[in-house]
Image (cartoon, rainbow, N blue to C red; front, side):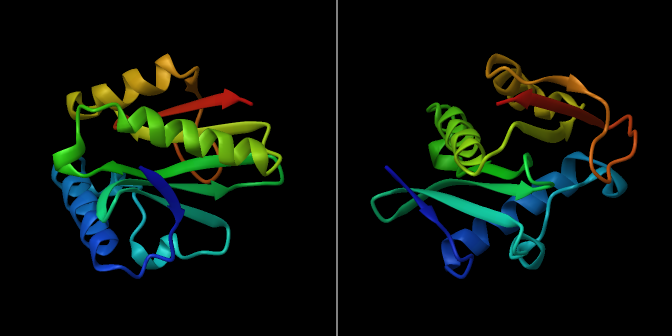
Length: 151
């Protein structure tokens, strides 16, 4: 498998991101969905990575620069046929390493409080993230948990 710094133009990535948004809106109230759409992911402050198994898209994740040394994880997603294979951890590790290589000292994220998000919260906790107050432009939200990790 290999990571590619993606330009977000391929059909496979467009489809995976559409599935991601649909699932986020089906599991969370719309005011609590913080997933970015395709155009928002194309901001200059975001690096978007896709993970490929030969010609098959296995997953993706984005890294948003919040400040000189603070980054946020966005849009982590594993393709349905690749779930339960440890790829979430692989993508998370890659994003953390990328933030560190860019001079990051802190990396944060927002995820949901619902049972659907429990595997993600477990992965983040096992990877050294801990609960923190809202960061950047986020506001307190009973449907969101905010987590951070020092690099």
